[in-house]
Image (tube, rainbow, N blue to C red; front, side, top):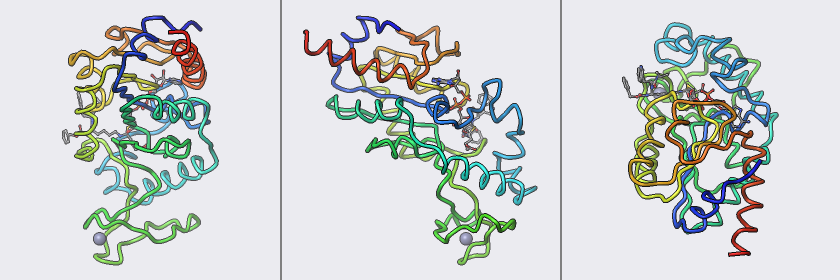
Length: 249
Ligand code: BJW
Ligand code: ZN
């Protein structure tokens, strides 16, 4: 895989680099994406499992599905893509990492500042009063835990369809998109809004737009550079080439 010179040049002139990641970044860690041919949404129904209505009509089903996914995630590790992205954070004056992923693998790989647009799967809170729920979860227990404050049902702290994204994370993402010099869209189908708007905002605001994805997406047409290898291959290579470029120039 060749890293285009114009990308290395854009990076070497960049003060602020921003990046939006999606499920594809964790695919090489063994976590299923949502919309690939073997993705979660080909097996499971998002309106049953990832919406407020779904939770209200069958909380036990939704809770057990998330407990099952947490177990899978607990047995995975960051891959070379996560580690290289964490290293990039140290290479620019400003580096803003925005993720749609709920698996916390960026943080495990060492990324310090991560804006989680769709929450995370590790934390839980009360569906009714929103109070964080810190008790140990017994995964053999099939019934949904209840809130010690109000008796409401406990839910995972992820963002379901129809729910607002965390205001601070979305503002930080929009601001980074408007201010950055280079923007990466990595491992996302760019189909879920408002996250899918962020790379477009970056491009409109003058950023050099890079897409890392083995497949074509709705964003591919707008990218200044498209890197078509998996992110776990692309980022280690990009880092190596960028370090070489900086030494030589
Ligand atoms: C690799 C790779 C490798 C593979 N390397 N790449 C009609 C039109 C427009 C919008 C809407 C609409 N109807 C409803 C909406 C809004 C809705 C939406 O956008 N729906 C669209 C699907 C149409 N959005 C929302 O509801 C959001 N909230 C909202 O809008 O609030 C305002 C509002 C409120 C009330 C009323 C109206 C408006 C909330 C969205 C929440 C999304 N939640 C989920 C689940 C999180 C919890 C969980 O994990 O269970 O978030 S859904 C799922 O999709 C998850 C992901 O974060 C998200 C994005 O998926 P992602 O990451 O892009 O994964 P994939 O699988 O789609 O793509 C993977 C990519 O990786 C592929 O391209 C591969 O090629 C690539 N790849 N291996 C690099 N090794
Ligand atoms: Zn409560």
